Image 1 (cartoon, rainbow, N blue to C red):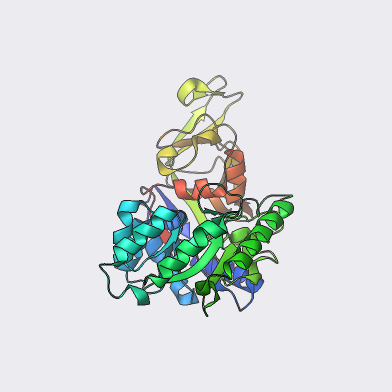
Image 2: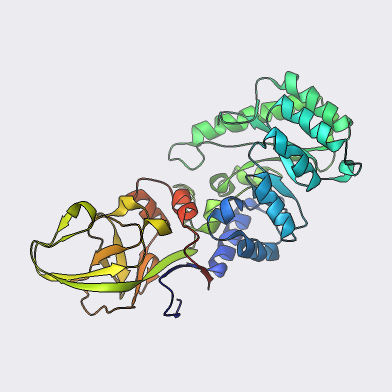
Length: 380
């Protein structure tokens, strides 16, 4: 826990817990599947530089990002291995991605043409990272239609024959982390298998090293994950649950902040914008230096708890931009400058990432990626 008294609020990142979550995924996948940790969105809000530095010690196959800019940042930070851009790149970004040796994932025929055009100016491109094709088996947001292989398969082979290596193909599962999602996942896997069978007519897909992948965090922790060449875990690595069938992750992120004000309250006193909470008895409130400008959801006002001295105490009133007020009447010895835990462990109590996301009516991904730059990331 940070001991710097100047810290108003901060995130603690447990690098050892991150490593344990990676090990859990690897044990589930088995030795034949390469690991592609997703580090998009600033490594799910944890800070991509330190996360990648730690993950590189665990021998990943490569890294996954969402945008060309994120991929270029990894190159600028010295990452040498494969960097795969998993969201469709804008056509104007494709030359930049090719020049940076990023592995683009392509979802439509115009993207194939744009990559071929960009590669003309790079005589070394046949030895470069090449491209992967995304197949839409039901997600619906990107990818070549699984029913139209005869239309796009030959076009991908032509790109390969023209000097831009076609190195892989994948799909994305939409319900692998859902209770009762097995049937939908099975349907998507079967569609993907049919695509692969039809693509055997294209020589590129039969070359050694051609990669097939579909496993996100949830699928990586299920029997389907280890059947493929690569897996792409994300939120589980950073402490988010991956569905009811998966083991719980080790908590990686804690959010802590300091008490900056105490108030003795009387019955009838109100607190916060809209005066949505009224004291029913005498007590003590503490104002804590963390609010929605730090990424703590406003939706948690009047319904969540925090930890002080290892005890749960309720949030009262609305979450403000810069502060949150909590009722410390059951822990009145809390003084100015003491640490309050919004997320993480304190003593024998813990507030988990998924507990917070459920209370806020969202998912753990949004909580993690919502933490703002105002919060220092402190590795422990």
